[in-house]
Image 1 (cartoon, rainbow, N blue to C red):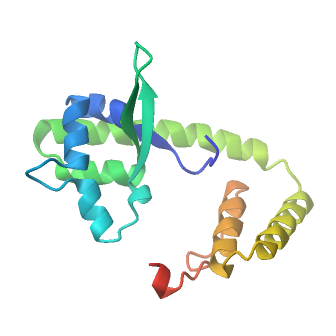
Image 2 (cartoon, one colour):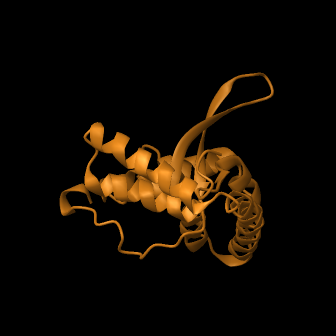
Amino acid sequence: MNDLRKTTLTTLEVAEMMEVEHKRLLRKLEGDKERKGYIQILTEAHMGLSDFFIPSSYKDGSGKENKCYEVTRLGCDFLANKSTGEKGVLFTARYVKRFNEMEGSFQEKVYEIKATSLGEIASFTKEMDRRMERQGTEPWKICEAFKMVSEQFGIRLPDDFVKIPRYYR
C-alpha cells in the first residue's frame, strides 16, 4: 500500500465479517432502482466518498474482473452504525480487531522509517514543496502533503495545520 496511513479492507472481507453476500453489500453501497445507496447519498452531500469507500476491483477464480470497494476504518464505522443486533456487534468486533492488527504492523513500519535522520526528512519535504509550487499546486494541498509525510515519520502536527478554503469543502 503506497500510503502507510491509509489502511483499508475490501468489501469482500467486510461482507465476510458482516456475514452477508458480497452482492448484498454492494447493493447497500450502490443502491438499486428503488433506493439510493450510501455512495450516492454521501456523494450528493459532498461528504468525501474516499474517506469511506474507494472504488476498486478484484479478479475472481476465472480471471474475470469484478467491482469491489476499499473500505476505510471510517467506512467500517459507518457500516457498523447501520448494522444492528448480534451480527452488528460481531461485525464491529471483527473490524476493530482487524484494523488494530493492521495498525500494529503499521507502527512497526513507522519505527523502521524513524531511523531516517531529520535532515533527510527536511531535505525531502523541501524538495517536495519546491516541485509542488513549480507545478502551481494550491498552498493548502502542499500543507496536506507535508502533514502526511510528517505523520509517516512520526512527527505530529496540529490538527488545524491544513486550512482548506471553503470553496473546496
